[in-house]
Length: 313
Image 1 (cartoon, rainbow, N blue to C red):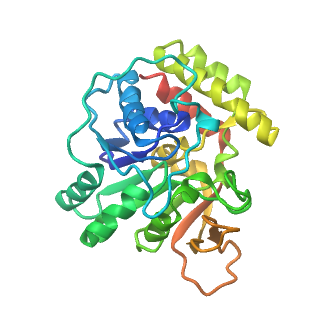
Image 2: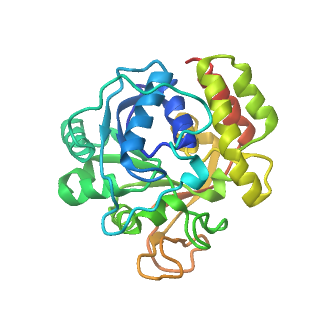
């Protein structure tokens, strides 16, 4: 089987970085057509820079990185430096990138790629707010039916929220964009907090990253060393969850994950529950299912895959 063509849409973020590294380390499974940056964890000037830093760390400087939307569709930008640090990649000391940022806007790259590739052959992999995707869908409705699948990290149901009591960060930052994407009709796979909170980087798992003893392995260990302090304090957990790598791991080994095909709608009106992903887990409405909402994974299998692939870089 030929590698799966994907566009990674991202707001790096340490866990975004690990997701990108996993994709770049897996060319037999994943063909990264491009990486599009969006404002989210930190402002756009940093997310596009961080995406290039990660490509250079991986030794994949031929990867094309595009800068996208710097604000949500209709709201002020909310960022997460309190989790990821002022750069978004706090932890390791990594050099500024020398590889170029592409001139084309990320939204136009998404549109052109979907128009030029065969229908049903490109998967979109958003790891941050869905602003770039929604903007592309609104600007060029003809591309929607050409998307093979959207595999995204975002939302929550049983785990409720991590930025408000009801909402997960990526969806909360731009709920109107999420609403566009979830109503698009494209097949969607959702990696919510319900599954990502089971990917805890315990000390033995982080020691395994560090034991790779390469610049990539050490940088990943230092990233998780940095941002686990927030999750340990907040959740009382044994380590930090690696949210975004669930997306790329699913593309490589979907058998590691379990979920339900349910209806998911996005709350865009309520001040109390803005950005909530309302998942009809129990099938109590007549709303048609529109997403595979993942709830469980084989965590040991996930970390074995991640450690093996990162060791390639």
